[in-house]
Amino acid sequence: MHKGILCIAAVLFTAATVSTAPRVSIKVSPAIVMVGGSIRVVCTVPRTAKNRGVTAMIENYRSMYDQLDGESARITHEFLFERIPCDVGDAVCTLEASSEKPASARQAIHVANCES
Image 1: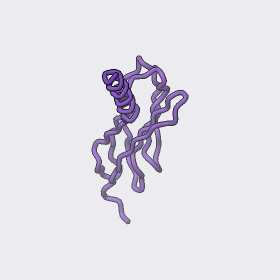
Image 2 (image 1 turned 180 degrees about the vertical axis):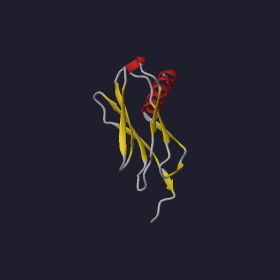
Image 3 (image 1 turned 120 degrees about the vertical axis):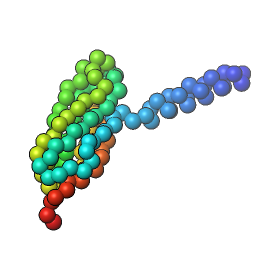
Image 4 (image 1 turned 90 degrees about the horizontal axis):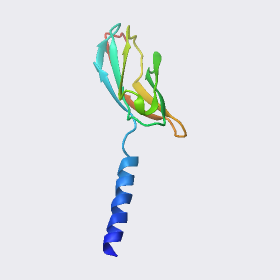
């Protein structure tokens, strides 16, 4: 009886752990860029059949989109943003999956040599 309860508890704990794992992560390089410079945004997403697309965006500037091929899709998606202007917001990666809310990750960008 106790073994059965332990097995059920282990399964529930594993399911809870899996469901709280981040569905998308972001890495921006460099985090500080000179005005007019370039920024590389890498979005990392797990391979699942539900994944449809990933968008990388620099707020107040522009965005780029990669369509995903479900379980056959790449895990890392790299986007290059060139000629970064002043007054941009954060970099954001957004994962679109069927029948789920979009998941996002963000990282701050600092643009140097902007006159205030």
